Image (cartoon, rainbow, N blue to C red; front, side, top):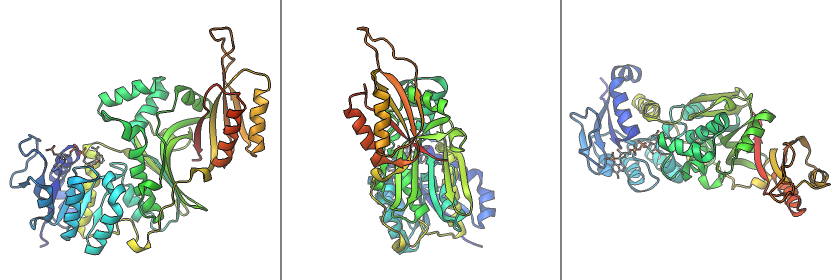
Length: 436
Ligand SMILES: NC(=O)c1ccc[n+]([C@@H]2O[C@H](COP(=O)([O-])OP(=O)(O)OC[C@H]3O[C@@H](n4cnc5c(N)ncnc54)[C@H](OP(=O)(O)O)[C@@H]3O)[C@@H](O)[C@H]2O)c1
């Protein structure tokens, strides 16, 4: 008879409490599937007295998660406290150092210290599992590392932040302002009081760093990502996107290029017919392009106690079975360095919205500046006639350009020239197009 796997859970919040309930609810099935009973023997949280609606009879409470991590009464340490430093980092290091496998849902910790933690896990011959850290309930880590082991992956991209997707979906479907949608997201608990981390693209970048490492065997490096958030996306852009057959999504994209792996997070125009464009509201989605499987899209809940616990429990079950995968799919010595962000080298199509003064020659001059840089235009759309301003002068005319694939460097140079020519009333709005 195999002895039970003894689990210590640090953090009894949204995810931690759901993990304990799920382990209890699926006890019999998990034992049958893994061939080993899974028992929570220790827990830690800041407040021992807080009522959490959990049955913790016979489970030892540790005031200090580091003591739990080192305890001889656990075989596996599950970190669900959060934060990229402090208790989470120290306790994970302590557990790995003591030769215990670790399961975590902490993308911030992995994006910052994943490389060092994975090296420690490798040295100690233990597992470092983190399925829940990217796209919540979607089993994307397993899909990339195991399910697609026979493929060469060329691109992985996704909607990795439910808050941003919720805001962009509501703006588009209901014509509401960014500020109104953000307020609703906060009221519904989708967005933090300080939403910068979500809407500025940083949360997406943490998750993308993990995906890029798994897909391309690169050393995890959040600093190698070019990041732009959704703050600048306007209703005018969403409306124009709809008319042109696009939708705007905040995507994290990692792509193999002749210059190395490009990693970027930015608002993106995607064709309305693509799989990823169908994903609305708080859902997450990841699309993978690979040589054998071609295109694969996974869609599901990216957050929430139960969905995230589903991924954490899957990792715990793997460890109960004795599975110990390389954290990033390769021996640490074989991981390559990530490329620094150089968006000037990016190649792709662009959506450009210009506010053009209603003056003779303006359109010809703009088209001429594009042609000088050999940028070919797929479409030009003038949005209505100029309105009369207060003093009777004509206001600017919105003009939308869609380019064929070109380099970002050439595009920025052409736009700089157009701005210098003095035909524009505002800074140009540029949104990259992702083929899908
Ligand atoms: N929530 C989601 O939908 C979701 C989705 C994917 C990934 N994640 C990740 O999962 C992790 C946990 O998130 P969560 O939403 O469950 O957070 P949460 O609800 O804020 O819970 C955090 C828990 O950690 C405990 N804790 C914090 N600092 C501690 C310390 N120094 N010592 C002991 N316990 C400590 C807290 O104790 P008290 O309860 O006593 O305060 C609480 O129980 C994070 O890394 C997050 O990024 C969350």
